[in-house]
Structure formats: C-alpha cells, structure tokens
Amino acid sequence: MDIVDLIQEKRFIGQEFLAWLWFKSEERGGSVELPGIGDITVIFEKHMLLEYGEGDSNEKVICRGLQTELREAKTGLTLGKKPEQARIMFIKGDYEFGVTLAAGLLEFRNVRLPKTVDAADESDDPEAVEGRILERIALFEELSKLVNNLFRMFLEIRTGDQWSSELTKIQKWSARSVDA
Amino acid sequence: MVVFFQVIDVIYEVINYMGLLNGSASFMRFTVEGGPLPQPFWDWAAEKISAHSFRDIDDSLDEYSIGWVSVKNMFDSDFAYASYAAGDYIVLSMRVDERKVSSAVLKKVVAKEEERVKLEKEIPKLSRSMRLEIKERIRTQLLRKSVPIPAVYDLCWNLSDNTVLLFSTGKKAMTQVEELFKDTFDLSLVLQVPFLVAGRLLGPEKEDRLDNLKPSVLV
Image (tube, rainbow over all chains, first blue to last red; front, top):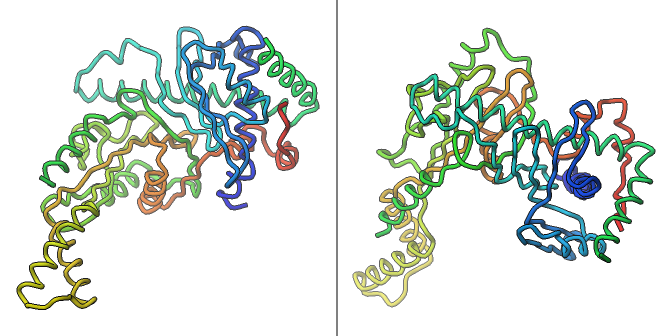
C-alpha cells in the first residue's frame, strides 16, 4: 500500500492509541505500569485537538486550559470525535518529559527534555559539544522508546482478545467523566 | 528596504533555531532502508558527506542550494568546529538557501517598468510577449538583489539501529531531507507512521491481526 493511503486508512491506530493512553493515565491517577519497566506517570495537560469525519465533513475541536480536566475534550470523545493531538507529560524516575504527540504521523512536537547537569555546560570545546549532543540524543531516544513501550502495550491489547473489555472500560470512563 | 527585511528574516531564523542542540524541539522518526552499509563505513561516510556538503550562493546568482553543514554552526560545511561523528551517531544539519521575491514586490516593480516602457516607446498598450519579457527580466533582477534565505534542519542517524530523527515536522523539510539523504548515501528514509511502528513492535507473527484492524467506536 502507498504510504499516503496507509497514513489515511490507518490513521485511527494513532488516534485510538491517544484515546487509550488518556484513559489509562486516569485509570490509576496518572500512574501507568509498563511491563518490564514499572510505573511511570502519564499526565494529559492543557492542550488537545480532536477530529471527526474525513474530507469535506472533517471537523476539528481545540481544547485548552491549564490544569483542567479537559471536560470539553471528553465531551467531544462521547460525540464520536477522536484525539488527533495531545500535550502529555511523562515522568520516569527523575526524568520529566513534555511532548505534544500528533496521532496521524506519530510526530513528537515541542518536546521539553528533563534538565540535566551537562546541559548547563555551554563550552565550545569539541568534547563538551559532543557530550551535549550525545546527552540530548539519549534523552530524545529515551522519550521515543517510552512512547514505543506504551504503544506496544496498547497494540498487544488492541490486537488481542482483551480489546472488547478494554473498550467497554474506555466507553464507561468517557461517559462517566462527562456526567460527573 | 526589501533587502533589509530579508536580512531581518535571516536573523529571525537563526535566533529562533531550535533543534538537536538547544531549546525545545520537534521531531519525526524514520528508518533507513537499503543497506548493508559499505565498509570501511566512516571513510565512505566522509566522502559522501563532503560531496554533498553545503555550497554557499551569497556571491553567486544561483537561486537555490542544499547540502550538509555542522549542527554546531550553519556556516561550517567543512565540519571544522564540530564533527558529524558522535559516538554511534552521525549528526548533521541540512541547510537550504533560497532566493525569493515576494509576489507583491514583483507586481509593483513590473507595473512600474511597464509604464516606463509604454512611455518610452510611445505606445498605449504592451503586447503579451512584451509583458512576459518584462516580468521575467524584473524577476531575475530582483532575485539577483535578494539575500538567500537560509533554513536549517538537524538530523541524527543512529547507526546501531539504523534509525533517523529529523528535527522538524514540516512536510517540505521532510521531502527535502529524504531527497538529500538518498542523493548522499543512496539509502532511503522511511517515515515511521503509526502503522509501520506497530508492525515493527508486534513482529511478523501478529501481522495479520494488525492488517485486519478496523476502527473502534469509542462511545
């Protein structure tokens, strides 16, 4: 299949991943247990873009608000809209990452990396520059792997027999969040 | 005045640089297809990168230039200040310089020139071919006066797992880097959209299940 068709036809995988991750982040108060890694914190914050329909009938809703529960976004979810972009904070150990994940192409936007000691060294010495580059790359890759691990967890459920029960939980969660 | 605003644009682009080295960053993920990598790898890479390093067009009349520069310094296409080799990674910046003429400026100067020619030749109206000739001549003159506008995009190639992070989410930059990477290394970059990432994460045994997935209703 051509990559353009693939992106369009399978767009729902990224969108459902974001919706599932949002549900998962609230299921245990922000704590998500990654198999083989342990608990990490996942917080959906202040910005979400939802989409509904395709082509001419495509609708978009942007929901913003610092420290809100994104109630309007959840209402959108119950109206059949799917998340297309979400601002998420991931905390793993001492590291805190901020990223806007875009579902269609799985783009990582406006990534905020954890503050580290080496980053403060502004020296132009080639070794210091290489050290800074390698450290930044390691952190970008750490975030990329973290998202991959969460995506794998979602895919195992999504392609497995557990999906129907997980879907029921997601439906109840979104309905309950709006009623509350 | 046009040149002034172009210089401001250049400064703005440089000041607002955010990518691999500092600030917050946006990136897309790719796999590198078409190996195996030639050996000795670093000699081969040095030759290829040098052959496709950025060539400055400030002192020429060229409209467009694209090539590799150091991530540390966009003026360093010899990698004198920072090597592109960092551990098991190749880190490069793709620099694209392009001369542009704004359509409003072109329209204004062409109209002025058309009036001048009409007066000079004492004719009430210009033929279509004359108007085309004036437009093309003015466009070339304005392009020659304009400062090339640079854009810089960082890239990091992980050689151990053959993946690339491109520090931009722009579609134009993506197409340009795919072409430059192919021209340089004769290798293809494949954007890791969710479905392809899913295939890699789940492995071939779950390929059928993944292929047959249909959208779920979340309400």
